[in-house]
Structure formats: C-alpha cells, structure tokens
Amino acid sequence: MKKLPVLAMILCLIIISGFVLQQGMADPLKKSDQSATSPRQTISLDGSGWRIWLDENAEWENDSLFAPGEFNLSDLPVNPPTCGWKNLQTLGRPCETPVCIEQLYANGDPGFFYHGVSWIYRDIQVPSDWKGKIIHLDIARARVRVEIYLNRKLAGYDLCCETPVEFDLSRYLEFGKSNHLAIRLTNPGGSRGFDDAFQIHWGRYTLPSGRDFSGLDNVSLTVTNPVFVSDVFVMNQLPAKARNVLVKVSVENTTSENIRGNLKVKIEDEQKDLPVNLKKGINTLEIPLSVPRAKL
Image (cartoon, rainbow, N blue to C red; front, side, top):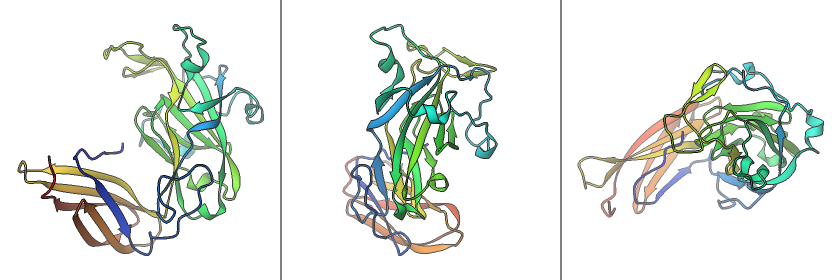
C-alpha cells in the first residue's frame, strides 16, 4: 500500500544521476502530468475508449483465493472470457472510467445488483521507445478481485483492490504496437449499509465487510527508468514543535548491477544531497531533515 505524507508542506523528491536523468518520451495517450524531461511519466487511461461486458456464465463462487505475497503469478489459473477473446471485442457496451457496474446497468432500479465476473477492456498504443523502461498499471481502487490480462496473458492479480494497487506490465507489453488490456473483476457481493459486522461469504472463504457494488476507479500508466522511486513516506519526529522529519525513500533498482548516484531530497528551502549505492531490488533510505519554517 502506498504511504502518503501527512505534513502540511510540499515534498519535492528528485533523483539526479546519469542513470535516471534521461530525455522523456512523447505521450501516446493523454498529456502527462510531468514535463517532457521528467524520468517519470504518468499517462491517464481515464475517460472514453473502454468497453464493459458482464460475463454471467463465468464460474467464480468456488474459486481458490490468494492474498498478496502468497502466490506466484505463473501458478494461478487463467480465466479467459467465456465468450472467447475474439468475441469479447464486439460484446458489451462502451463506457468511461471511473465506472460503476450497478450505475451503468441498473436503469434506475435501486434494487439492482450484479454479483459475479465482469470485463472492462480497451486497446493501448505502446511506443517503441518505451522498451527498456518500467511500465506500471496503476488502479486507484476496484471491487473486489482484479485479474489483469495483457494480450490475453495473465499479467496481474490482486484481492485487496479497494486500496490503490499497481501491476508491472513491462515484460508483457509489445512495444511499438497496439496492446489489448482487459481487467477482469469479480464481485462476491457486500453490504449496502454501514454495518461493519457484515461478513461476505465467498465459497469456503469469509471476507470482511465491503460495498455491494462493483466497479473500477481511476486507471493510469506510470513509465519510469529501470531505477526509480517506488515509495516516499514522511514522518514527524519528536520532540513536538521541533520541526524535524524523517523522510523514508524506497528506490527500486531493476537492473542486475549496483548503481551509484546522488539522491536529492528537498522540502521547501531545506535540502539534502547524499551519494547512494543501490543494490538490485528495493533500497530503503532514511533521511532526517529539519524544516524550521514549517507551520505545524
């Protein structure tokens, strides 16, 4: 889960080194939130271009469920649409994301519900110069099990999608081509009130209370270099009103080599530069900072 800073200040985190500071790529979908020279590009997939189809014949009630960290993706069952991949392109109806299934199909009936499998899908054009980059699919929230299929291959799975989740699509993409992205949602039901004691029964599993409706929130692609900041967490430090913070930065190195560079952390006018030696995998760094002008 992503950790968000809670201080009333602006955190500006910049990686400055030869392995990160490279020319940005052109945005093939929608204008990026960053400048053209940023090593991190965020491309929104929200809005039109999607289709949705209710897979009412799909079996799901007795599925085995897998929590994060308890599975290898290659070992999971593959669940293609019951209509077949080819027919999926012509079935369903156009939609925009974010999308709520009950809102789209209820036709004004407040008692309408749909428990089961649905597909939300579209084509995305992937530039050839993205090859060698790390491309994540970011979903702000979904209900409740999510399976990601890219070009008909299972590329992601998550059972906790009512919190933000990301999937690394890098090795599944075909660069310089159109790629078919299909998101398979399974909704076992839930509560339409505010009863925290309500439990959801899914086959032999019991899940905590959740909403009865299903849908997909904001969706985007994040493109980074092979070495990138994967998480930032800012903690206030004692004593009270001392205006000291601890910045925890996770930097992921997806290359096979140790990478040397400089990490710059800046909060308003306060800044620290420190040399780093990043091993393969996730490197967590802790940087103490004092921000005398902060109004807490």
